[in-house]
Image 1 (cartoon, helix red, strand yellow):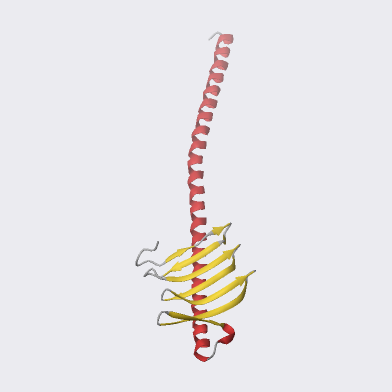
Image 2: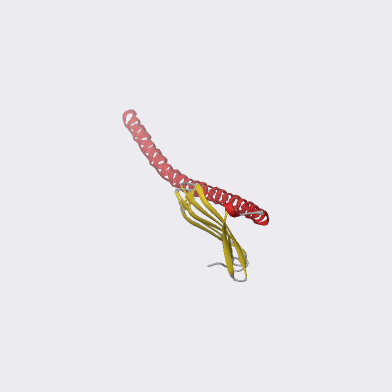
Length: 170
């Protein structure tokens, strides 16, 4: 699934928009991010991970966050805290989670833009390659037509001069 030493991103696009699950792992293969999308908008569950464990969970419906939770881990047990119940240090931790989420979302947008630019460059390269190949074929065909046309012209000219020579007795 994930090669060690390389951050991984898995996503699905439909007509240029995120559609399905977006998953990201860090260089050590630990989960970093999971989100569900429909037509380019968050729809369903979004989960930000810290050290491979859920940290921030959001529930989305019609591109709007409906619920949000901070997950606190202690000795293999967790507490899921709704945003409304957060106080002091938990609010600060939620703020850090939001900052990390913003960084990940920016990275995903930059990746999507670079992928789109690469695709556009490849399409242009292939079009140029096909145009050049087609131009060679067009030149060859045109050369053949010109050669045939010149041969016809030469034959007609020769025929004309033969007629002139016959009439003049030369």
